[in-house]
Length: 244
View 1 (tube, rainbow, N blue to C red):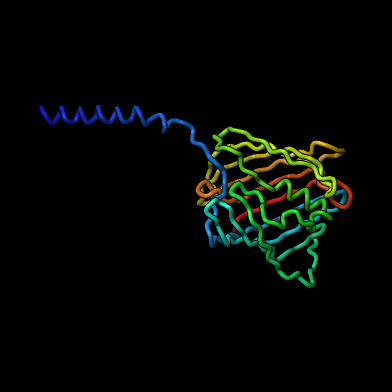
View 2: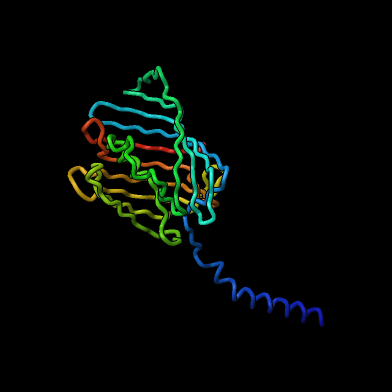
């Protein structure tokens, strides 16, 4: 019957097409893990830092607001950020902040890989006199791989030391663990380990990032840091950041 032949011919053509394209379906997908910001985007994150040394346990809390103010054709982007509503708790007792510092915004520019490139990036800041804050900032600073990766792939980052700032060199190893749901978002799970490579009592850390699979933005992260300097004595610090 002619229509049977036409149907069989259609199937033959379909299978020929599938033969050429099915390989693309079975290949492992790759991910660039770069944030693709859009002008006008607003994010608010809750930040919690718990640190313990000797018999003292200190908890810091705050909100971080971020707004994308400009995205350039080459992928460079400018963000405005502001910290608000700080809290401090020592050994379970919340400390009253009589005069909450006025929220002050900061504007920074980054390239498409998330590396800061504005002219103020090398100016002294509070972290230079705060080794505890500097250590946490280094641990939390996620850098995407130079090329797209598949689930199970690893990549490394070398952080140079800086004697003037009292920073020791460190190495970070990342691994793309897989994809999963975080709330309503499709997320990519990335684990990491961090270790200073010189000096006594090196700062070490391990943790997890969850990035939005659609645009690479941070959904949440957590880290446990050992020997981050606090009151001249290394202790354990736990950091959690979550998008609200």
